[in-house]
Image 1 (cartoon, helix red, strand yellow):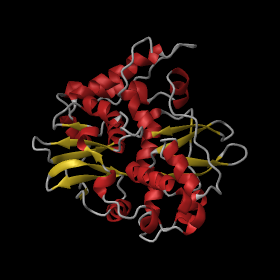
Image 2 (cartoon, rainbow, N blue to C red):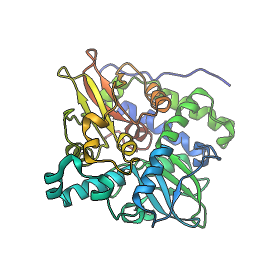
Image 3 (cartoon, rainbow, N blue to C red):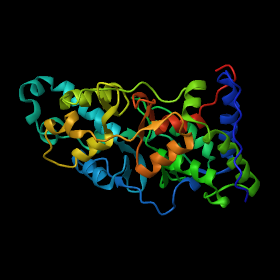
Image 4 (cartoon, rainbow, N blue to C red):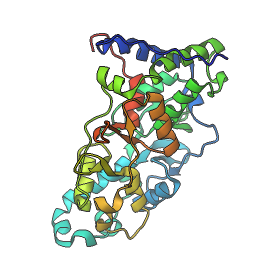
Amino acid sequence: MSSARPRLRLVRGGGPSELYGPFAAAAESLRAAPVDALVRAGRRVERVPPDEPLQVAASRMGWRKVGAVAVVDGEHFLGSLSEDDLLRALAQRLEERAAKVDSEGDSIVVWGQLLDGLRVGDVMLPREQLPVVRPGAPVLDGLTQICGATAHGTRFRYLWVLGEHDDIVRAVSIRDVARSLTRIYDGEFPAEGFASPGDYEQARTALAAVLDLPLGTIQERLSIGHAPSVLRTDASGQETLGRMWGDRRGYVLATLRDGAALGICTRRDLLRSLRNPFAVLGALRMSHLMTSPVKTIQGSNTLCALFKMMAIEGFRHMPLVDGSDRVVRLISMWEGVSLFATRRGAGG
């Protein structure tokens, strides 16, 4: 198998239209592979019933380190509960019980005084609002769905592959998709996952043409990432959660005076704190939740390097910094993967 990877030639001063074709070609090449090949067949899918207490389900998610669990009635798929659903429930309860929060502040017990009485079925997303495909569906069809937005403006964690009786066959995470793109690029993806060896080689060539692009070039010609959501390190738990939900980003970033990254607080950090059934609101302050130091990436790094670092480190957000380590953009895994799902014409 050839290991040559052609690089895309860019015209100096060229516009975004010159990248539409290569990304569209890379996306089209994924029609020859089924979504079933994106994840290990033996992966365990965490399942919970709709009447399970929310605290029990959240604790399981935290200990299992999963971004979402399937909500089932026996083997029948009803919907899913994700980190975003937990964040949404917290933000809503903080608003509904603002007077109590103002009077008791950090001492409020999250599960006892904010999320008390809630069950999984109260906050989950139902099946009809989720990205769902049948076994054998093309990868591109799955990409188009998982890169959409939820009814609440957040992003999906998983693509659900369901059988004819709505039983769960696979659960494909956005991280699985990014990892699979780099495995195809490296020639490590199972060739039998494609319709033919020729289709596999075509996909490798098409993906290499865009995965080898520097992030700076993609940002200049197409745009990738977004302005970072920045918050003070001394922000209260109420402020931290409010910003994470209000921006629909699922994270907040702390920076130094010169703009360098100091710490980042994500949904995963929140979920880790919520494993404790006696967690108080004070434990959800920015300074307590955030992870530090923060690993960053530069414009000279390629899209492939971004995906590999995210897959290896388990990141879903990475700051893009300039030569002075100042954060200029924040790139989520979803934003990188969505480049292969967005169908654009030369006119934008």
